[in-house]
Image (cartoon, rainbow, N blue to C red; front, side, top):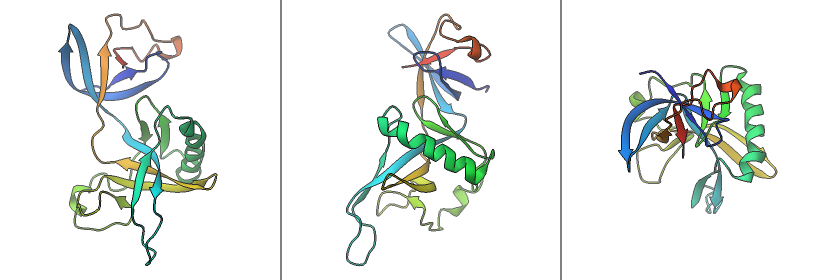
Length: 183
């Protein structure tokens, strides 16, 4: 299927998604989509730093919300680090609802083949074999370590279908018809 743009409420930003399904609720039609690009998050650890042996223990990986002031501070730093390390191969975007990463990541095709391999950069709930995220980049900013992580669980975006497809589109976004608007 062709990707469709899911617009934010003010019509200035969008995220390209593959439509998964369409539902109707109270006479309003909604499209559920999956981002075309890699869903990623900026995170930090919170909790006890180490036990007596120096191993990480009791740490929670905390995502930074997309509309949080902290995201305003940390996103440009992460964007610059990715640009320095990967050039144009990987581009971080602050899209509505989730951050996305444009470009090819190593291991895209063989993720299912390496379930038995242990990777110290794969972080998940302790005692479970399922990986929840993969750390792509770690960096320090203002005395705290942050991680850009790839999300392995699917991210679903729900958009309200607009009756007037160009009502909220700016002239700059005219080629991205406003078929869906995020709630």
